[in-house]
Image (tube, rainbow, N blue to C red; front, side, top):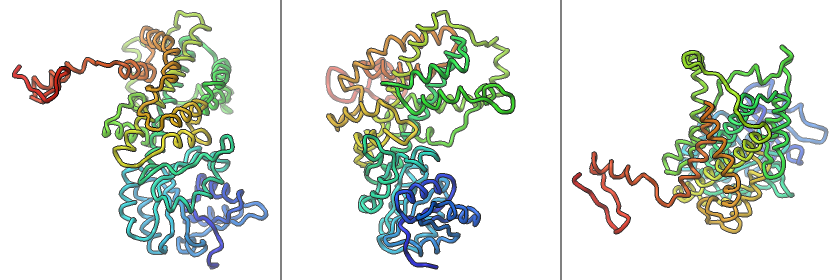
Length: 469
């Protein structure tokens, strides 16, 4: 077995792992991949182009032996026990200064525990979020590294080379201490949940409320994917409505079950928001909506009981489409507002020192939630790096107020015509609550004190008070 000669190693040669290594090979790096499946390892080694240096191995010892020091090894394996298993097997094979990178969707609390476990071992450990799917891994993903800063100095040039580029800038950057990388990726996925839910609600309103056909829906979403609303999720939505089903000849979208799947990162974001606490209601309702979609048999039983049917909305097509467009834009912006406010709070609470300007720059290309709005956010955070919430920026407030009449109208129409639009409603409620200087929760405080002597504060004097009601 040859010693050294390879720049980067990968544990896991699934689509993501092999594509990321091939991306590195395209940029001149010699790469090696480990997989227990011998066929996968052989297939990977044979997939390189002339002049590229690729190696597939079937033991971790062989992977370690073929890497130059300090060894740089990324894991792309399922989150949880598999990550700990690989770390435990790698650790005795490595030397001081070697680097282990978890590139999967690990929960940030697990990443913190692993960092603490390895901090005195001499082996560096980093949690790195990667977004963009298999195509992103191959052509340029968004990469969110956090943790060991010294380790990032070593692996940074490789990650920068393979990442997506926007205006010539790599969509990667050191995002903070400890589990910052995985925390940012978790919130990225929560925002992704939210925006997907919002788009599906707008689809429902236009398909059933307006009676638009699939080709018309494709045209509408394609038209919306420009200017201030340009985004990857709108782009792929327009393409989805074009796809024909080879088995039936109809449009594929009409044959896909509405029982939505989930891998848990949206739920983690919602849970973390509750723990901070920092309200992220759009992410909460997106998780809820997927859970509700899973009650398929119950929904089928309930539909005839209540005489449920989709009904047309009595408004001219052009006017309603315009209102829905502005509502989607408003609610999408609010989704980013909530997620970024959550990162800001967590950065302080967990001492992660996450630079918000760098986060939104990293998200501009390669990732699932890339959108034109992120350029605007980057400018805001550049001017106000300590901003707690985007809604506190004067210019951004003007954009929201411009779209506000539309979402008020659409939410009203949706409720009046029995369309479930929890995402649009959550965005409007969050906006209305955040801009109020005084909320009716003073009554909640009075109730808590009445039945549980939980005390309350007053608006006219300092201190903690209790009343014998």
